Amino acid sequence: MAHNGNMAKFIVRTLLAALPVAALLAWYAIADPFHVLHRYPGHITTGGDIALTINYGYVSTENFNYYNPSRHYDSFIFGSSMSQYYHAACWKSHLPAGASVCHYDASMETIDGIINKIRYINSRGTRVKRALIVIEEDMLHRWTQDGNPLYAQHYATTPACDYLKFQSLYFGIFRNPEFIKYMLWPKRYASEMVDKHFATSDIQNRIEDINESYYAHFDSLIAHDPRQYFTHMRMTRRTFTPMPMPYSPAICGEMAARVRTLAQLLRANGTDYIVIIPPRYHRRPIAESDLYALQCELGNSRVFDFSHDAHLSNDAEAYYDNEAHLTAAKCSQLLDSCYEMREYALDSPYCIRHR
Image 1 (cartoon, helix red, strand yellow):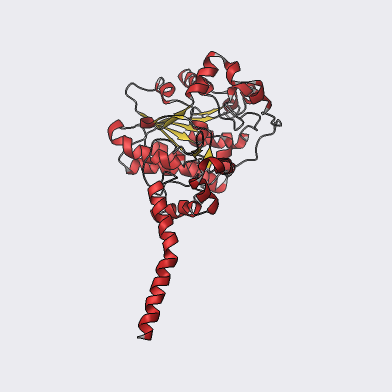
Image 2 (cartoon, rainbow, N blue to C red):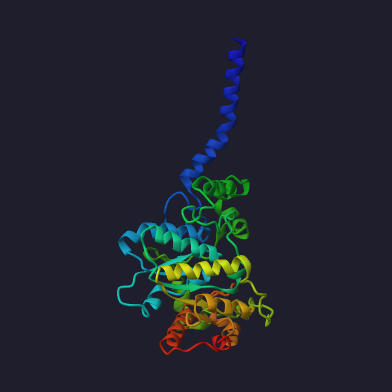
């Protein structure tokens, strides 16, 4: 009898100890604060003008899965947040009639990430007929960050992660006492979450069925009265130190193999593609050996380098912010330049030197 009584006490104590974890799991499942249990349009907004930061790579895959059966995408825009403002409507003006465009971007995207996305698209029975790929210099130095909740790849696109591992990453953040305080009192702790990059005040407009993010108000100001956007206060914050020397070469060893794999995938899909290397405000241009490597693997007439453009690299009004995101208007101009150079079989000055 004593043995049975001790066993009963053990079971009760175990259940009591498990109750807090069970309660947190239930709360996590109901709240779904990171948008990783269900598909949602855009951000979850809490605490007024503050929104929880979401994993854009995850959202891109979920939107592709949801809309592709009806939209029948065949043209894709790949890249990091640097690719977001190449608007589908602008790109479509250079594509055949009937092209169906989808943004398939991810924050802090990598070459590996683009490769996995193309493979995933193919696995769903869709061919990448056309592609616009934005490869900023930083991307060549980045590797996938599947341990970071903002940048982890969707579990369906990578063999390195399964559903449970993916969810455990987010639940681990959710049970952090600081995050729980934010969930209970969002306005009081919003600034702390912004500082930790778990939340953002950067709330964008969305076109869900093409997975496009944009700034309707900012773009209107820039188009009609740039001084209303590029205010003295905003511009004085841009205090970068010029860095004229190029970055150290990145395309060698494993990265060279990744770039080669990307080129092979594009050829296997019969993809008509262009690659844009964007300018960055007061940032160094791509190393010339890396530019040459990209041109060799991806095609000299398909790779367009604007990172060496001194005017764009020093024009503060070409960018939305200090992170060097080009405005939609500038992105549209770059697209026009790329297709004009293709049409007339012209190379940029920085391509010519590698002939």
